Image (cartoon, rainbow over all chains, first blue to last red; front, side, top):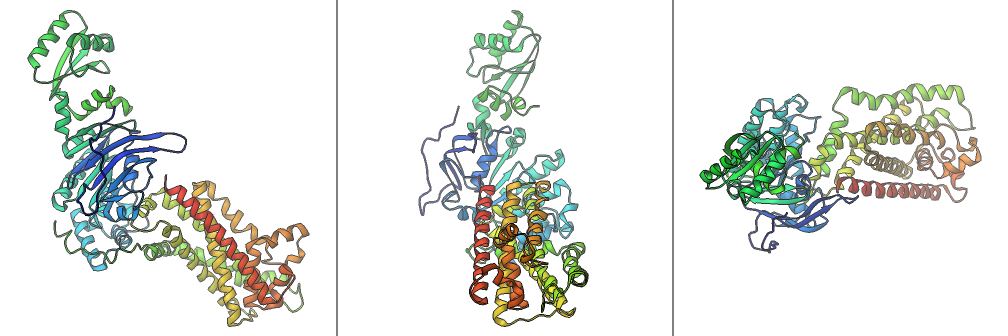
Length: 333
Length: 278
């Protein structure tokens, strides 16, 4: 399944274009692995855009193309109006990147890391020093700025990398799995910082994550990827709306797959029931009462339903219904 | 925009990077006292202890040649490639610990990254060479040089340093892991020195090995260094080329070194591009 962009777009000279345009992009690595299969999407100015999906979905490759680390096999991508293949230097002038793994220079202090970055980005020395001080304060690192980064905690390193990515005042900030490997309180802290950056710096943010519940809170729009394809594109609310605001989860005593098949035939709903372990989930739109009556009738027919709960639909449910597989199965949980 | 984003300028739109990356490489090399001592101890020990000991044991191998000077100066061709090869470890560290990726998304031409590293390593090598020459002179080496011949010293050291660092970059990206790269340091950093006439003349080598030595950049480099610092007779250039006057022979050896360096860098840049762009 793939999501089509109706009109194929390339930025025109002198015309304000979205800061990120991906148009029919494929990436086949040597050896034949097709990591990205013809995806298209755009990111609007000032938006927080999430690339979501499990490991191997193609997020990192898409990130690599947009940050000029990977060359697409087919299709085109533009960042800040520059073709990522034809004018990578233009792209790199316009972006800041915080990678999933720490890429700090371990030989130096936090401040020295930022200074080197400022020089590579060709910032005027006095401006750079002012901005470094401001960013260190924003990232709450000013007290430890002159300590070697080897002594920093995981959260401090991530905050410094966010600050470094912002140093050259990028038009587009790329954050690859910004909260992976961090404990929950630090993850909350990082997301709060991301929101603050969008609000106060006005920067367009493209982030990738496999924490769908976190993306739901932070992102204005998301693209859900699975096995190299785009399976959903829109705001979290829009995507959840396509499924229904709530889900009924039925606990099955017996074969949940057989029960889901039977429920699918009986209920005839737009989204087929989905199996996750011993649970079968069914999307509820605006017909909760009808659905409850139907399920009660089925229950009495002896499908082995031993319990039911109603809960809010999440992006993980959207992923599961679009791909036919629960996200936690894809993540190997 | 906040105050953070305000009043913000770039120096220019020209891609830079050589100077900051060169500075970083030098700072990494000189960051710790053990690191500095490690880079200086070998030339100092060689000039003050090893070369005099070799001269006592093996001296007077050729009439009119001061063996202490011969061996002390010859060490340049051991130290420069060894420093280059050893610096290849930093390439792997930068790649493994990730800072390379930050450089790859910087608005600089990517070939600036290995070139800046090479210039940093070459600077360290030149400091070592100056120490060797200075200490050797202070310790009684019989140096005989001229402005025209010093050009060949500059060319030989720079080309050998750049060429062997090009090999180090290519090998570091190719093998990818420190444990696989480690054995290559003595293999390339030291072994050719044994064959190039660094501490004995090529004439004492078996014929087959001698012919192999003629094709080693190290051989041309040591001959050029001796030509620049000791004179025509001691250089060994005549033995390599067998024709022409000494300046012609020196120019040919310099050309051979330049060819080696060009090939090494062609390889290094190709491997670098493949390793950093998928």
